[in-house]
Length: 311
Image (cartoon, rainbow, N blue to C red; front, side, top):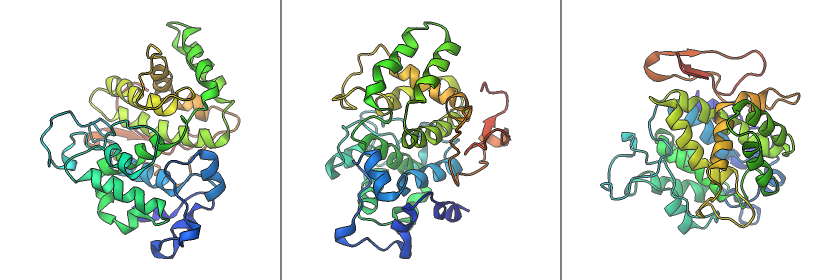
């Protein structure tokens, strides 16, 4: 099933990984890390395979894994297995550059395990190969897959939401203090100004994070933590690196938390709904206690929710 999902990529980007994952010739290389969304759309006719591949595998295998994106605690014993659920897939924010040295740090994980896989997969994708077919063992390491996904988003030259909308996004929170419904509505209106390629990143990413949080022991706490981790990748002004302190009183994280919690309102309840292609329609959830359903309005990419959990 996973292989079938990996074969179904939108647009023209499937051609880059055809012919049994053989590399693209030197003059035709299409690096996917460190390039803008506009450049990627021009090169691939859509988002690159690394984005869709990572999301599909994570939606199938990682919803119940605790600490999936959490950075490794300082001083933790090296060599610990990446499959132990210790958060090895989290990335240390090392700036938006895509150099190999930055990627090595950015993969942030145990001694040689997931971190080496993240770096190697980056090099393979950038050389035009299908990394997850060349390295099939990586598909079993959910922390490495999470590291690849976050490293790709982190390597974008700018935040996912255009920096020109940064101040307006923060204003959607300060203009309606304590009124979550109004904040969500204002943020939804603002996101209508984003180009389609921006929403094509935000919608499936926030949808996955939404269902991931619901499958954790403390969904609200996990959602707040993920919003804090992804805020500098999604919302930051011009010239600020992902390492720099936000100095926004947590408003960017609050915006991202709204996107995660209310992703249907943000990205589905629209005249032009964005339906991520080929993502799994259902996935297993915690201990078999989930209700798997697909809404009739627009089929969500991931539809597992924990019984009794708040939406």
